[in-house]
Length: 225
Image (tube, rainbow, N blue to C red; front, side, top):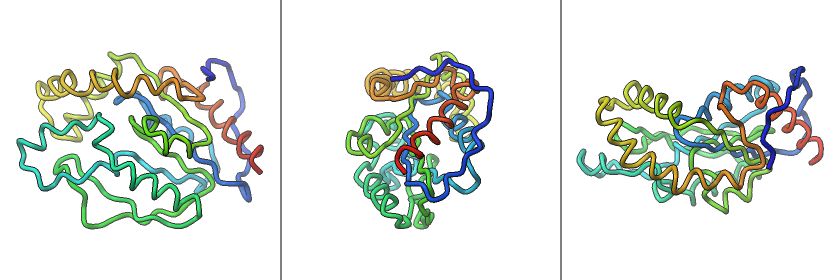
């Protein structure tokens, strides 16, 4: 396991052309800054070289439940994810076959009838809080990254996100955090840190770590070629 705190003064500018596909897992607690890290890594890689597979697209379809039942769904438990389908889709991408990725709505807790066709690129990034909890999925990854952040920072991001994107009231957001997010983080997410090859402290604010991750990607791709 490598904790990245060193300085890298240059931006990675290598080409991934004709190199073997690389699968990267980026995990971390809710509100840790995973999405920001993913975006910044993409910006350091060649254009159109990355396929993003968000874990959130693979939540089980619960559209048949009523509003009261939907409010009790534990989105932070591994059982809420359809890992069989996610693994199946990653296997297809590894064979350079396109997939039909689900579209999931937190507001209705259901999947849309439509899907998104996704093609494989040189780098496939699987991103989500629980992706390192599934051994079959974990074993497919060439590089496993855990984005770390202080609990207070994560809570502030969660409050902002849940109120703005998921329509939760402030008190409901705090209740949801204390009932589900915090205990599930301690039980299922934090322990997966031990599977990570790289830990990125401070989330998307750690520019040094992100530069080093990009450099590691190029190095690993070159070693696989």
